[in-house]
Image (cartoon, rainbow, N blue to C red; front, side):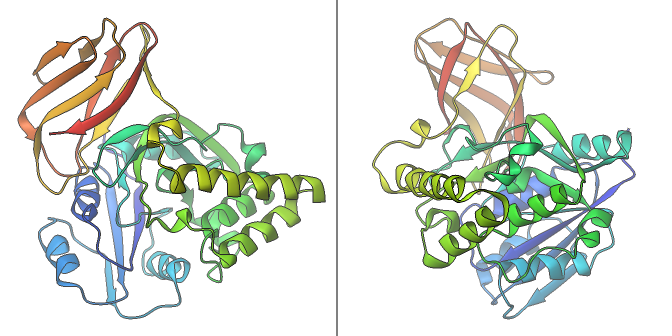
Length: 339
């Protein structure tokens, strides 16, 4: 049954990314009513070409300078009226059907004001390495650190408006600040233990930087919620984490939570973040017996001791994801690459 709830998605666009076509494709793969607002700081023909070819309709569109990302997000929400709010960046995408599951939670739990779930992590080559490491299920931890992956989070408009909306003065921590203020206002969070989106990590990712402004914003949040000692510990952890993830030569998988195949493996959606359709998915895994299943549609599997190649017909389009049940004996899945 299709949800009757519509969801407003703000798309603040500062610059084009190679993944932007997949972002739009992931919105096209949803089965709920969408109000999409697009705010572009300048007219880039690559952005316009992807928008024009997306097959999507846009509730609101604007080209021109703004007061920053948070202001653009607020602008998009202000020009829509859907009861549920979210936003995407130009390199982060939703899993196919994710918003159907999100809508059902809001429909079934009228006391819930924020729904969030897991994200997978991909790199500049669109290789997927594992789960977002920061996501945790306990709402009480939100005062210590940002436990929510932004593209996998959705809020009731009424709850957001009750606390004055997103803080448009923030450049780096507007998401954490928003979740925190919702929690402080005694709004209830609901964690979905499933993958809802994919986040792209690159050297150019805004959260990769340790700018003075970002550190100031984080420090203000920690001072508001923590003791002096815990503030110091939290800020030190942030710096160590950034240097480890973004500045070292270690592969991303050392900083992600590994995807694990087990006898009770849950549905694992794998998204195609490439700008074109892909037919083959290469999966590197530990040397072990491993079985791949799909709820519908046949596919071919070529399995070697530490590598499997899955072939799909028809191909998986840009921004679409394929749902897999991957069964093994607590087997680590090292990376997923569309080839």
